[in-house]
Image 1 (tube, helix red, strand yellow):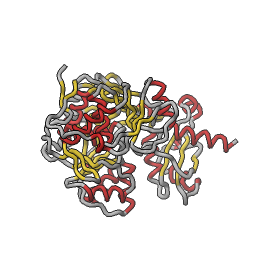
Image 2 (cartoon, one colour; image 1 turned 120 degrees about the vertical axis):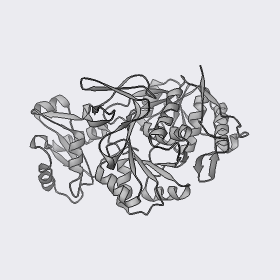
Image 3 (cartoon, one colour; image 1 turned 90 degrees about the vertical axis):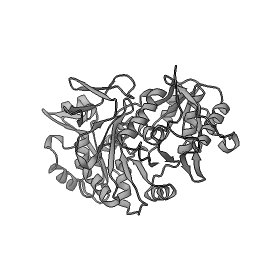
Image 4 (cartoon, one colour; image 1 turned 180 degrees about the vertical axis):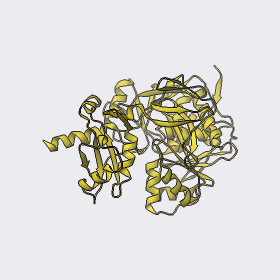
Length: 447
């Protein structure tokens, strides 16, 4: 088994991370990871719940260097953590904050890295390529979260491929992420891109627009903001003045061209998107305002069998069936047609929930909204979709009238339910379980 370095192409004195206390060198990071690896209690599985991105990065490296596996749930709900404890016997949660934990999951507060600190490392440690270092979980937006193991060799290739695809190898940026590192997108684009793409990262996770402005003011330029459509829209709507941004990177949901164009006009920074999934890892990139086509990352291959597209090669773990419907082009690029689970067929007509959601959310006065297919067989038989909308000043009749001008009548929701809010997870997604709960509550109230 040949090993690959924890960090690629960097010298001991190069800066890997930026913290409120100051910069962190490659040598310091390696020393922190080795010291923590020696301090962790026995056990194979560590649930990495660290909120500080530097703490997260040190803990993941400590796990990899000591033969442990970092479990990375995209949700920290009690039900999710309890399921992890049941599935991975002996799992231990390592936290750097007062995260509520179920009794089934023992907690181990992250030790003070300053107290553990040893001598800075002159040499970067190596990890065997086939070592499973992390298990990532799907977001649960379409069902129960599913685990996907990631090996070190593929993760190293992943970081390099993204850096090459985005042109960062020759122009490293400081990465400021609004998404958690536990999520596959945040994992790849703020952690792997730093370790193996020549970039550095900010240790925080700014959520509110002013937090983002403060983070950008604290790091050197050029800076790339790793975010989501939901966060990007919030920043632009807030009117908060941002320090210079060199580039925006978005993923986890389709980004509307008008929103991307607004961001580029407001900040002068190009907006790029990442396409991928937890199952496949990231696969392709595009500049949103340049067209609908996606360009594959180096080494990635796509094959089609019927309506199913399979990804393989490069940093993809094995051969993975994609959840989306893709149209492949002769030049190697592709366009997205929708998700298999997202497609709705009623009375011989076909559309996607994503399209319906977009039409609902662009109605003036609608702050948020989502269509829901309660039960596929029942919906197909009865021809019923449900929609939930957050529209504080709106009236149901007026919203339905506006929606009727935008979508085919067969897809009109029965009913349209006005709600105060629709909960989203840390990456801005709406979990199916959230819509199920709203639907069940509406049924109870309607009786």
